[in-house]
Length: 323
Image (cartoon, rainbow, N blue to C red; front, side, top):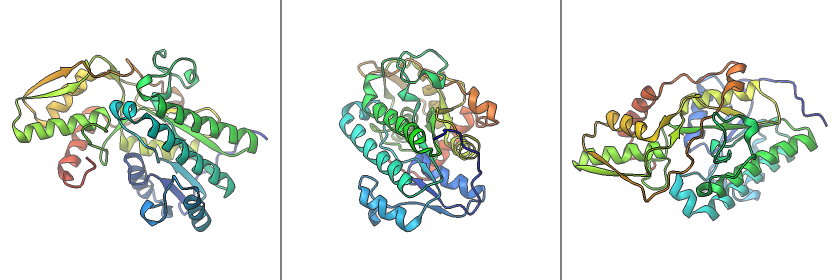
C-alpha cells in the first residue's frame, strides 16, 4: 500500500483523543485545541479503568469513545538521574503504553495517529544541528538509553504500520520542553523546572548557596510548551510522511547560561555550586527545524518570556504543582 496520504484537516467537531492529558504536553495540547475551537476532545483516566498499561482498558475505551484522531502524549518521562536509575521502568512502561495505543488505533480505524518522540533519541555525538535523517546513525546517550530505545521502537512501529497497512501515522520529535504544568520534582524532573524549584525554595528559605548538578558546559535547546502545543495541531493538519519531523526553536544555550537566567527570573541572590560528580548527558542536541519552518510554523515565545510565564505559573500553583 502507498505511504502517501491526502492531507485532511481535523474538523472542529472531530473526536480527538489526547493521551497523557494530565502531563505537561497533553494538558497544554488540550488547552490549545480548545482555544482553536475543537470541541470534541476525549481523554482517559487511570482511576476509571483507563490504565494505558492495560490493553483491555484501552480497548474498552476505544470501543466506547471511537476516536478519529489520536495525539499520543502519554509517556514515562524524567531527567538524567531518573532515566539512568529507573531505566527498566522507562523502557518497559513506554513500550507497553505506546504499543497499546498504536495497535488499538489500527484495530479501531483511527483516521490519523501522532506519535511523540524526543530529541534525546538522536545519536549522542550527532552532527549539529540535528536533521531528521540522523536518527539511528550512531550510539545513543547511555544515561537515557532505555527511554530512547522505547521511543525509537514507537516511531519505527508507526512507520511499519504505515508501510504494511497504509495508515496515516506520523511522528514528531520535540526538543527540551518547559512551561506551565511541568513536573517540578527535585530529582525526577527535567533540568529547567528542577532548577526553578531549587532557586525558588532556596530564596524562600534564605539559603546562601544551592547545588546544581553537572559542569554546566553542555548546550540545550528549550521550547515553550504553548508553542509546542500549537506546533502539534499544525503538524496534525499539515504533515503526512513516514519520516519524523523536528519541532524546536533552532537555537540553543549553555546550561550555565540557563542557570543564570532562571536565577535572575526567580530572584535568588545566593551562590551556585556545581557538582561535577553528576553526569552532563549529551554535550549538545540542537534540532534542525527547516522542515517544519518550511511548512509555515515557527516558535514564537522567547526564552526570557517563557521563563517569566513558567515561574509565575509555578508560584501561583505551588501547592498543587507536580513536585
